[in-house]
Each structure stands twice: as C-alpha cells, then as structure tokens.
Length: 287
Image 1 (cartoon, rainbow, N blue to C red):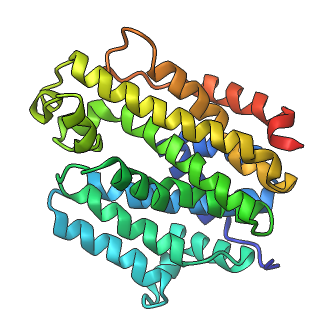
Image 2: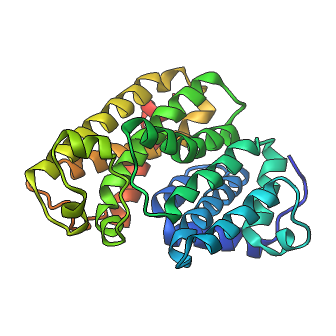
C-alpha cells in the first residue's frame, strides 16, 4: 500500500458523492477499516459518476464522450485532467494501493453505454450479462480491496451482483418507464403478454405483476446461491458482501402483495443503516 496520504478534500468529495447518490453502498463502507473504506468510496464514486452520465446528457453522443473519457483515463491516455478530477485521482490511488485490475472498471463504463439509448433489454441472459459487468464487478472489486483475490469471492460476487441488480431494476421501474427506458427483458414481457407501451404509460396490470414476480424469483435464486457460498469466502472479504442483507430486505419489500410497481418506495436511510449494522455483527458476514 502507498504511504502517501490522499488529499482530504478528494476523499471527502468521493464520500459526499456516494452518500448523496448511493446511500446503501456508502453505509456499507462505514463498517470497513479506514484505508479500505477510502478505496471502496473511490470505487463507488466512480460508479456513481458512470451511472449519472445518463441523467446529465440529453443526447447519446455527449454521454458516450463522457464514458470514453473514463475508459481513456483508466488506460492511461488522459494526462493532467485526471489529477484534477477528485474521483479519478482517488480511483487511480485505489487501483495502485490495492492492485486492482483495470479491465473490470473499463468494462463497467462500456456496459453503461446501454443506458444512453432507449433500446429495450432483449433477454434475461442479456440482463444478467449487463448486471454481471456492472453490479457484480463492483462486488468483486470490493472483495479485492478487503482481501487477496479468491475464486470463491468472485463466484459470490457474480450472484450477489445479479441479485442486487434485479432488485434495482424493479425498484427503478417508475423512473425508467417515465423516460421510456426498459430494463425489464422483452423476453419476459412477451412470455407474460405484457405490452411495452402499457409499462411506459404506468399501467399496473396482472401481466406486469407476473413479469416482476418472475424477476423477483430469479433474484432470490441468485441471492440464495450467493449466501450459501459465502462461508467459502475468506473471512476478511465477507464484509464486502454486507449489501446482500439489504438486497434480502429489498426483495421482500418489492414482492409484497398489492404493491404498486410505479410508486417509488425507497427504504429509509435509518433502516438501511440498521440492516447493515445487524449484518456486520452476524456470523453470516464475519466468520
């Protein structure tokens, strides 16, 4: 690890960014040691910057240019401006201090190009591939920050990310449908006779509920697999999967009978903190 202390303002900037835009991941870092926490915040701030591109542009091309800047920065083709960007500076420091692979980070940025267009997600396999390159990658990189790489951690990361990502797709349906963007796979919509235009119009139909119910079932399977494999992960890396406790609660909330899928119902920050604190003290994530 580097002995050079990072500038306090860049660390605070990343912390503030994650706290504002991705509170569950911010809260999860509170249970990590200081050095590891700074690296985790850098990873999650980078993810926030990538995800926010979609909301900061009105046309795909400017969004692609912004995403390309990040991939160029990761490949070493951006000079000067990287040091002036607090998230880029912190990310590069985390990569150096914890010997993180650059390829998953570049792939994460590339995968989010999908967000810039209104093309629907075609199949369940395509959705899982998207989530594997985004949510699962973050879990895998977080595990590498907390402990040396292991196949077990990578295996858990894949299932954890898909479970978390599906929960986010369901929770984000009100926002996505308002923007005529669809992460619900067309394959599932067709199988249940659910029309895309009904989703965009915010129509709550039995067909849509059937689609969401199947998605919850898929996520629960991945969550169960991730939790069953967690004991094989080296103990120091297990806290990087604390968010699975939040996913478990999210899926339960999102599958409640009578829930309106177009009514945003985010959990409170206090509840998120309580959930993660309890998980941090459980044998499931520590021993």
